Amino acid sequence: MEASAPNEAEDSGNEGGSVVLGGGSDSYGRQYASVEEMWEMEGAYSDPESWYGRAADYWEDEDICPATVNGVLGGFESLSPGDLEASRTFLQELQRMTVPGDVRVNLGGAGTAACECGAGIGRVTKGLLLPLGYARCDLIELSPRLLSEAPAYIGDKDSHKCRYLCQSLQHFEPPPSSYDIIWIQWCIGYLTDQDCIQFLKRCGAALRRPDHPNNNNNDDENNNNTRGIICIKDNTCTDETFVLDRDDASITRSLPYLLDLAHKAGLKVLHQQTNQDDFPDDIFPVPMIALIMDDDDDTIDSITS
Image (tube, rainbow, N blue to C red; front, side):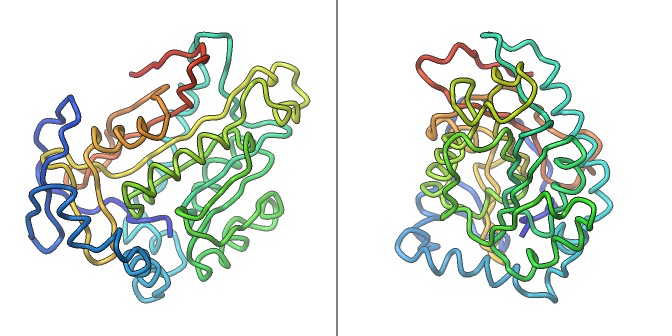
């Protein structure tokens, strides 16, 4: 799965400031007084296999999701070129930023490694990560049907640069200090809050650090002073705390809700764009968020824009 492409949304209200986890609704119109009530009603914690099984069944259904760009984007193939270009611009802006502590973000080059979570057929790997110059890309995908199509989609020229890992995000355990970038797009909504926090913690530990031996894999001596980043790009809702999609068992969170989970995972925002402006007005806002580990001895301060 690449996860839900942007579903149609209601008109947006204001985005809010402090984190207040209030009520929400589902795709059938049911109202929930709180996030806790929704998770309890869904049985996501008492029976997690059922919750995750619904999503797995959804994305394994070829009639629902053909192994094409249009299929993994839920019929929104036309958004893909602009989406990839905006993501590229976001990362290039991030690379040009002056980061305190004389530490920089590494976008491609010899020895670099990227990870695409919820990769589907590898749309982001092919259209963004490999063109940026990452030497290796790992595709993490729950659906064996979609993942089996990824090498052909990526093409003979670049498919050998990739590793294809068929596993769920809630069970994904990347090695420490292994990635320069972990890209998470349209898939984090399939995780429960508890699993989301633990997943982000593991991703944070998997980011390359300036002082880790794995950071010496690059021929450029300056890259010994680089660190990895997590990028989340996903739907958000603005006039309620969450919207549950009952068809594929996913949750669209408000931006404060999503950032609160990242904070609980020990991450902080390095760079943020609150919405992709060229997307249609009738879909959920899709922010881009670059995150790093919030270590006590870290010299990098949070930078947002």
